[in-house]
Length: 198
Image (cartoon, rainbow, N blue to C red):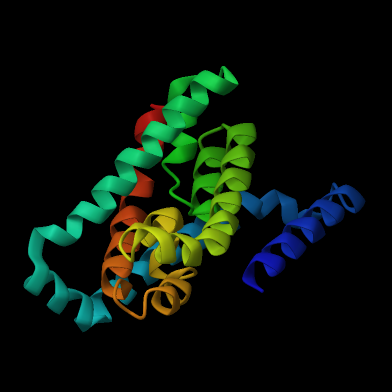
């Protein structure tokens, strides 16, 4: 349902932009997206601070919980580097897109605000497709490869959008690890994307 809402919103935006290309709201679009971006980051911080179960699990399992996001980061960036070779695009650009880890709303906006509008559009589409792929394959991965492996496709979305799906597919075995994975990857996105762009 969320995916459908996203596609509908983007389609409406495209149509509205074509029908009303000089609408006054477009003059303040940058300010609106910047405010929305900071509000989103603030709310993620609030959510992390209020979730006591996450902090308790970190104390119990310690550094072992970091192996999942570390593996996701390495695998995602390796995939981005490989894609740069296949698509003949600059490696830094491919890594910046990959470093969105599925967080399409943030990655696309960040790259667009850095003057890379086309790359921002590519990042948006790529990370939306990652989330769609995750929704389709998480149950299959959990069944055939195990609970912890099922976290990887979701990337940063494992702390929100794909978390209920992971909880259901793994009988809650990987829920806390998935939330921690999503939180860490979400924190890395605003650091890695500008780092790769330079």
